Image 1 (tube, rainbow, N blue to C red):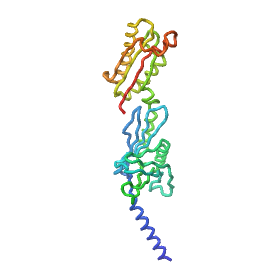
Image 2: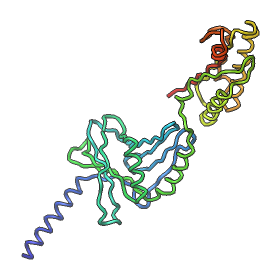
Image 3: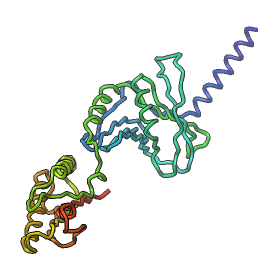
Image 4: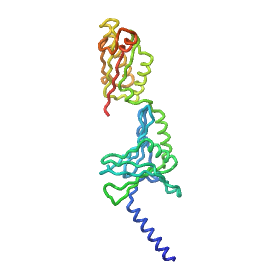
Length: 291
């Protein structure tokens, strides 16, 4: 009986060693587990974890009306075919007895980095906060005999995670798309914006402080038909130039701001009533940038 037990134990050890030999593991060790925040602004926050010999795990969120989060596995060697990776929350070696838990599946796309949606990304962060190790398992695309595991280490995570959360809390509550095309309106026979338009312009200015290097800002101003054509043309130019000055004060280079004043041309509504004239007294702001 003793010999039988010993033989069984030996067979189990040999089986486990062979299984482990076919599993290539990528993870940061205790001494080199590094978390950092390469990007922190009012427009974007990124929390990064370096995985030696594999790449980087990136959690990124952007300025927006809605809370958002993306996870990207930035691989040094991109996949050569399509597959599916299983994502688990795994206990570190020093937490023996804690069960692993499956979180999600991640599609592996040919020649693309791995990505996970917002729900799974936040869940991975909370698992790291608890000291667990989010781990992905898949079959190697260049060697079908090997399994691959990619783990995120929670060592040195908490301090950078707190800084990341503070960055997220400081993000602007609107995105580039929300302000890329804006129509502002003016008070009658004045270069002063209406109260609502002043608030809108302040939003654009706050965005430009965070991202002053836009490709181009187009400012086009118009008036209603009261006051004479020449007067209205000069008034529209004055309005456009005033907006340009505001933008350059936010850090946008003057040669990237183009202005035009059309006066009472190109009405968008009637000039026969107060509401129509108020719509015609406008400036259109278009922001352009290279993606």
